[in-house]
Amino acid sequence: MKLNETKPRIAVFISGGGSNLQSIIDATKCGILSAQVALVVSNRKKAYGLQRAANENIETLVFKHKKYASPEEAGEALLKELRACEIEFIALAGYLSLLPATVVRAYHDRIANIHPALLPKYGGKGMYGHYVHEAVLAAGDTESGPSVHIVDEIYDNGRVLAQTRVAVLPDDTPDTLAARVLEQEHKLYPRVLQKLIKGEYDLD
Image 1: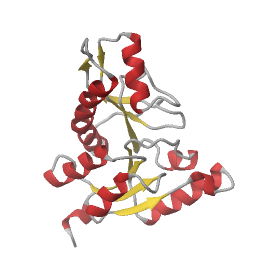
Image 2: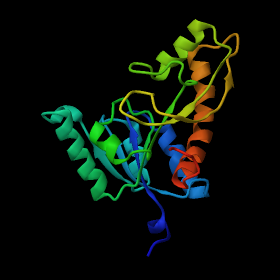
Image 3: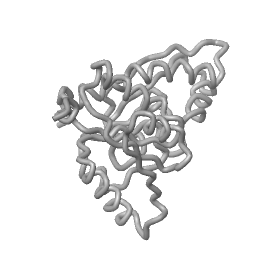
Image 4: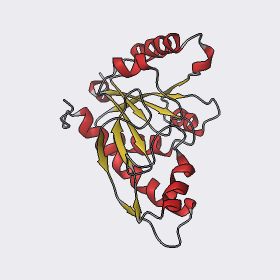
């Protein structure tokens, strides 16, 4: 038996470049995260994160909700794929689609997401990427930073597990703020996933 076969199997969901996916993969290699990235799912077939997965010989799946007649049918199809891969936990990492309710219920308290703002501020549908950083700057906030939260059936709504605060500088642009927040995302997310997997959060 391979050593990593005894570790919890994670599916990472992406829509773009997958830099948080890479940080999770790297964390599994250096012992920060005691888990195996067993599947990478994307709703975009040209997402660079799929190439990152291929580079690591990780199984990939392009999943498009619109292929299915109803959200319920999409959910059942996705759940079937996750179960076939024996997925135990799900990490959303820049995934710009709402998970089907069927999957959220099946993986209750076992799905996490990372968001580039201090939730509950600047969350919800349409609040992702530069839209978040632009909103922070427009509001004149003095700090921002990533949040990791449990996923439920509403965008960015579940319980926040951890946050890292990042100062907003007077000369910040959405790009400069995004870069500093992303650096902290890469540090925070694998550590929170490790604690979630180990059952160190009281989620009752």
